Amino acid sequence: MDQRLSGVDSASQGVSLVRRFGLATRLVHWGLAVPFVLLLLTGLTNYWPELKAIHLGGARLLAWLHVVLGFAMVGVAVALGAGALARRDTRRDAREVARVGMDDYLWLQHQGLRLAGEASNPPRVGKFNAGQKLNALASAGVTAGLLGTGTVLGVNYVSKTVFSVGLVEPVFRWHTALALLFVPVLLGHVYLAVVHPSTRESLRGMTRGMVRREWARRHHPSWVSDLEREEGAGTPRGSR
Amino acid sequence: MDPSRAISRARFLALVAGGAVLGYGGARIWGRAIKGWRYNTVERPVPAFDASEYRLVVDGLVERPLTFTYDELRALPGVRQVSDFHCVEGWGVDDVQWDGVRLQTLIDLAGPAANAKYVTFHSMGGVYRDSLSLQQARLPDVLVAYDMDGEPLKDDHGLPLRLVMPRMFGYKGPKWLTRIEFRDLQDTGYWEARGWRIDAWINA
Image 1: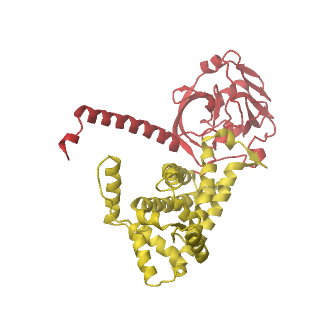
Image 2 (image 1 turned 90 degrees about the vertical axis):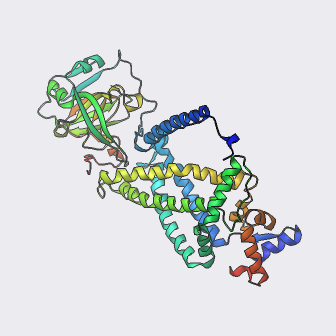
C-alpha cells in the first residue's frame, strides 16, 4: 500500500508525499476515537431527562448503550494497547509523543507570544509539536481514567450490591469531571484537524496515512530531515 | 518587558475583576454539573401545579379517608430534616434540607385498617407511582416534603409535594405526589415493573 500510494501520487500529480502514520497507529486512533465519541454523546444524555426516559424492553436505552459500549471499549482499548506495544512503528510514535523537553516549552512560549502579537521564532519541531503531545497525552490519560472509573460504574449498573454508594458516588463525580473537562480539548482537536486552514492537512495523516512533504517540512522540519536522512541511508520505507 | 506595553492599573483591575466573576460563575456551574441534581422523570410535560385545584388524597384501606389542600398540608405539624439523596444511577446529593410532614403523621390521622399492609404513592401525571410497606412508611425519616433547601420545590423536583425516603434510592420517592393509597397487597411501581428492586435499600 505504501508503494502504491506514494507512487501514484508523486507520479501523476507531481506532489511528493511522506508517510505520517502507519496503519497500526491509525487503527489505534480511530479504534478509540469512534467509541469515545459515541460514549461521550450517550453519556451527555445524563443532562437530558427526556432522552434518559426512553426505554426498550425495560432498560433505559441510552444508559444501557453507554454501559455496553463502555465495556466494549475497555476490550478494544486493551487489545489495541497490547497490539501497539508489540509493534515497532506504534511504539516509536508513542515514544515521540512522550518525549517532552525544552523545545516543547519553547514551542508553547512561541505560540503564546504569537497570540499576543509579538514576534517570535519557532523552535525546531519533530514529528509532534508540544500541542500535539499535550493532546495525545491528555487523551490517553483521560481515556484511561474514564475506562477505569467507568468500569466501576458499569459493574454498579449491573448490580447495586457490589459497591457502596460511598464509593460509587465519588467515582461517578470523577467520571463526569474527566469527561466534561475533556470536551474543550476534543473540540480544539477536531477544530485544528478539520477546520483550521494551516493545520487541517494533518487529518490526512490520520486517515490515509500520508501528508505532503512540503507541508510536513513547514510544520515538522526536524521530523522530515530525519526521515530524509533515513531515506538517503536506504532504509526501506515499509520497514519503519 | 517593554514599558510602553505595560497595561494601566485600571485595565489590570478590570481584568482581575472579570476573571474573578468568570471564575466564580464557572465554579458554580461546574459544581452543579458535577455534584448537583440530575432530573429524572417519566412525566412529561411536568405536571402543572395550581394551589387552588391541588389536593392530596389519603385513601384506600383507612378508617378516615382524608383530603388536604396545599395550605392545609403546610399547616400540619411539620419537620425539617437534612438527609442525603442517592440515585440508583450512581449520583447523589449530600445534605439536602427538606421541610415537610412526617408520613407517620398522615398515617396516624387516616388510621390504616387492620388489613392495610402497603402504601402506594401516585404522581399527578398518572404515569409514575411507587410503594412502600406500611412498616417502611412508618420510619421516622420518611417525609412528604413541600420545601427543598428552604424554598418550595421546583417544578422538576416535584412541586408541590414529593415523598422523601432517604434510606432507599430516589426512585422510591415519587414527585408531584397527589394520592397516598393504603392496600393489602404491594403495588408494583413504575420502575419495579421494569426490573428494579422493590426494596431499594441503599448499600451505604
